[in-house]
Amino acid sequence: MLSQAIGAVLPAALAVALSPFPLIAIVLILSGAQGRRNGLLFATGWIFGLTVSATLVSLLFGGADDPDNTSSAIADWGRVLAGGALIGLGARTWWKRPRAGERAEPPRWMASLDDTTAGRALLLGALLSGANPKNLILNASWSTTAP
Image 1: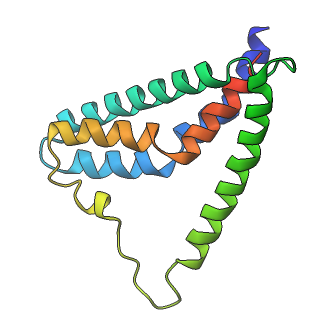
Image 2: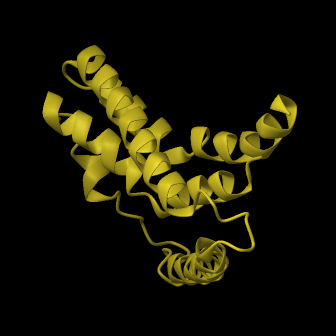
């Protein structure tokens, strides 16, 4: 039973943990002023954001594996809409990518990480994890399929 639960959750957990956003952000935060403090606060915000989003998704879609439950149909349509949204976001990113020879501008949030404050590091960690569409979809996938 435990091995089934770990097997169901592990792929989504690895996808969230190996996301490039926190890795890039933590490197930039650690290299800035007050890097240790801000790095710990960013990690705390990251864990808090994931916890809140996982809790909300579990509360909303916790009974989605039961066919008699009304949240099952909602979860099924949610998966279809989430898949369509991810395809749309991927296509949008593909079309907006820099062409050959063009220089890609770094995102504003990334450029401001060198001189971030403690509160901003905490908030940025929470937002990059909890409000990230990929993390929300991964949280929904494991919470509706975990035994």
